[in-house]
Length: 119
Image (cartoon, rainbow, N blue to C red):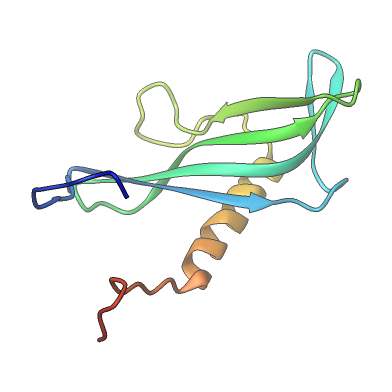
């Protein structure tokens, strides 16, 4: 490997973000924009925790197939303009996708150890 590194990385606790991606079963979520239907097959949800407050969902980016068969990206902002609560008018099925992402993140139970190190 032709790379060197120095330092001691530190996480900025004021605004910690996690992106959670989930694959969606084809045909289970249809997004409609400007009268056109898009079949969503992936959702990437951005969660954030500001100053150790509870996690909130900020946005979800959907990958979907359009009526012409081409893949498109559709982003839904989940926070209101003041960023202090959920955006009004977001369809319940989108919140269901967000809840699935949150559940999968909590259920994964990721553990990590440096390569070559034990407990």
